[in-house]
Length: 304
Image (cartoon, rainbow, N blue to C red; front, side, top):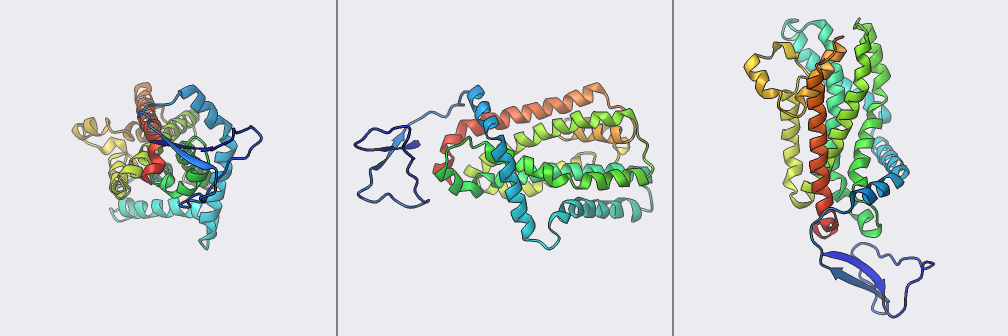
């Protein structure tokens, strides 16, 4: 059911301001505000108009993401430094486990690749888990405002990107100090990161929708993230994967993307087919997530 409000007994004019109520507050008996519930079918709205509405709110997405990030940082002692410390500390743990404890069986030239993989995967997990919470955490905003609801998961993805930006110069310094060779293949990182952003938007839209109807999905995301992390070539080189296992893993969504990252950071050019496969996964996830989200968007408030 879709809900809208109208004034009873007098026509509305463009100059009138809409009447808003606090969440959970019923209109007083003398109010002219009347709620009208209209049936609707679960269908996708016109995509062109929806995209124009989203683009018109791009400034709102930027400001909302920065406000959310400021709120998170004020709750911690180190504040913005966590954007740098978090992925680097995780990288240090994996370097310890897979390089030092195993007697140096991992070559040192793989360390910059490992750190980059952890940083990039951290962006993806932030998008998925943040997207899962985006609708439920914004129930008050949804009850009092009219806007394309996709703004909320997209804001989470944008926030995960700007949160990771401070670590980029730190990583560049590590990459240089470790003696990793620079090549023109590094220019391919930009389109690959764009592919990952598209994938993150699709994942955020998907998890945002599922959690509205199935709250348990939020708990399952922890295990899904671990599966995706260990089945993608992040903390181990692609070259050490046995052929029969690689033939299975290469069909998973993050494998072609992070395999391409590895080759680029190692000074090689990934195969065009591998990059195209990563892009196909990204577009497929975005398409499915968008369809699922837009189809159920008008029912979100009734299920919160």
